[in-house]
Length: 173
Image (cartoon, rainbow, N blue to C red; front, side, top):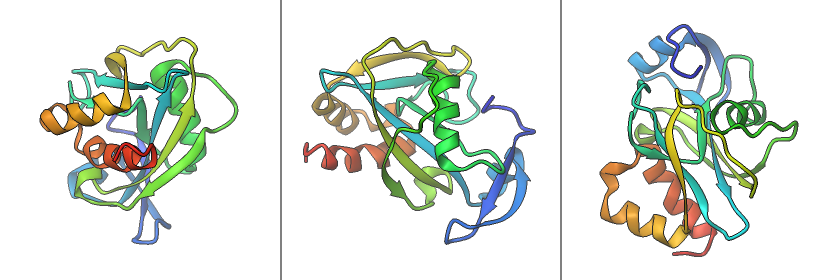
């Protein structure tokens, strides 16, 4: 589970190279660079699935976020983490990682995480884990852009950074 303080993460340097391992608690308390994945899931109508984070989450509870997101565990690579998180958070179990869409450097908005953002087309059912996600909605990308502009405080800081980059790639401007 992504909320456990005893999880271990790879600590990385400015080139996203592993330098050591540390617990989740220490990484977050001291602002060490680490890794995460965000997956944006789109349906056949082009809508994106957004999740409202569970109130049980230690970071950004109750805020809207990417379809699926999570830390890369110690010894894990980005693609493996993406597949694991899809299964854990929204019930999509698959052996192949989605397409890497773009990368974000570690910064304040990401919580000092280097992030790979993935894109996945999926029109089947989504089953949210209530420990991770309060609920989710399919939203047209143009509406997401309007919503983020009108109510930025309703979204996780990382999503507020990710969405304009995704929208530009979707040619929403």
